[in-house]
Length: 346
Ligand code: ATP
Ligand code: FE
Ligand code: MG
Image (tube, rainbow, N blue to C red; front, side, top):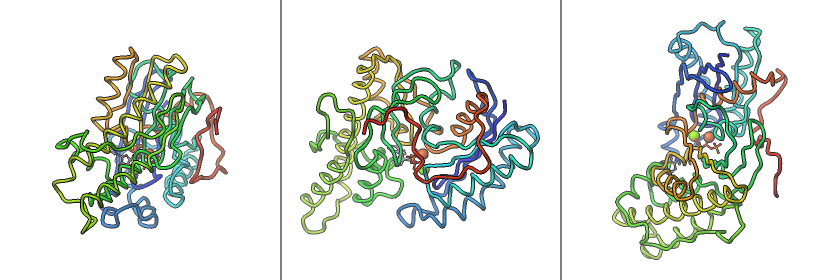
């Protein structure tokens, strides 16, 4: 089947066309128009600017997605779009456009959860379909560990009690005067620093606990900045590498330890990692190393599929389409759409 998907939950407009079956897919095209440069001057995403720019970007992106895939509109079997979680006014643009295309072509519409997209993205490139695994999802708005049993069957094992990992990166970057988005900036700056320069807290590492908390770490970084610079309260350029490296070491240690612990708790030997923070090279290396030591297989998607994209939405769409799980045209977006997990521990 051939699926066209739109992703417009936040500040990237994306359109992808994917073709395949339950075991193997080809990304025929995957277009992204990033608004990062527009929002950077405000230090974060401005919702009204985002929705306006989604509207402007979408039509040309759909045209180029079809052109680059070498397909006509009538060769698409179903239209998918992100329904949430995300910004309401941004979600509406993509969700409504995909519905309109479905109506116009009398093809099914597929309403997709953005987090299910991230969660399953490590399987897009594989040849075996979706395999049972322990999934660490680390993005701008979420940090969770799930036991993925099969498509649509996800058991939540742990999540952040406060900030998401990506959010912590972005907030700490802001404190340090680094530009938005902070994740890639902190990673770059950390390369020249000593990860042991500051002993930042590793929260909730007590045995058996699979939840996360990053707000204490954020506060510890803030205190360190003001202790080092009592006059200005601002970090100096030469202090940044050690602070970034030490912050990053603290984040990575808890992410890796809890993921391995989760896998051990259900005797899983396969781990996946997804979401924007999984672009981080130091995290990738640390997770690969830990998986090696514990004889677990690790699947991470390529970096361009880790951050927001439409191929991951098309991938979930394809799996729904092949199971005849079509969405009703009356279905709506939901800015707080929860992932359909089977057991919410809390
Ligand atoms: P969600 O998917 O939870 O709704 P989102 O869509 O905003 O949130 P993503 O696009 O998956 O999140 O990821 C963006 C986040 O990833 C940002 O917080 C960004 O700072 C972080 N990030 C991106 N690259 C890196 C990196 N190299 N190191 C650390 N963090 C990174
Ligand atoms: Fe995302
Ligand atoms: Mg984003």
